[in-house]
Length: 439
Ligand code: DGY
Image (cartoon, rainbow, N blue to C red; front, side, top):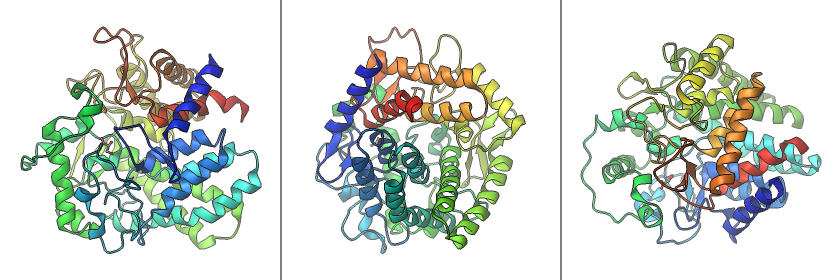
């Protein structure tokens, strides 16, 4: 079983690789390079084609803007299977955007720091990998400088996102409360996602109106961060996003230690890290819910729902023992019934939960991968192993889909795999889970 699954996963990654030096997430549905997808993909590639793993990250970082920003999508190629494309996003409006690559003007969770660390862990030839890291690491560091300089208006060490697509959890019910504060125009556009995936598994037309309107507001201000902080109706401190930044800070610190020197960078990283972790725990932990929640900076209020993002700080070593116990209880009680696979992307006990719709309920492999490592590192091997075996079982039964139904008995359809098929990060992280014993 293991060997067949590994071969299948490699096949997915090989088929999705593009001549320009990057891997598409899924044919048709996502035909370009996505920022956090590339990071997860590089972890999988590192196990069997280290040169391609390096190429994936090199291509991504090559598209970095002069201010350190790394975009969420890089439009390396033309494609008419995706909307909204480069002509809608118009990244060229920002004076420091990349002159060669067209992209979006928004970003995605900052995982590249810990991806470099993972690549180092996996690489057999450590010296060779260290040479690659030395070549690339300052770009990732500059990306963190960008975040702390431009995305933290209250100087809390907690950075904001201004668009739901920046969170990675695109249509989470978390955002519904923000959509309630907005009244965007009704756009006329031709969706392409629903030509690849059933509408019941994708965001609604009205949700897309909100997504497009947020981009239009940012474009109106030429993607200026200060102006966005002032005017965007969507301004959120997201626990997943900030947990990724914190984990990547730790990774950069460890890698700079190995490289030697770089004292000023390390000092700044430590300073950010201290402030970020303290305020993360103070501001984002919800005692009653027993886990971390989002904070709506525009409307100055916490958004009090449990989602799989609430548990990702486990991966970054953020909670202390007391918070940890609350989190494990919440995870088991709300998400972990015997009739469910871990881990639903939104609280299955809540009325907004939808088991088929993208980030409103389905299980995602990248979040499971983080939960597995987080629980293992915190000394919960049984729960960690359950997350791992649930993950492998979902893939085994359904294939390398984008997301999965968490209900063990799913009477709606004969497959519990939804969204894009042959989805790259599902394949990449399964390679990592299956081979971890050997590395
Ligand atoms: C989409 O088009 O749904 C993408 O996930 C945006 O990043």
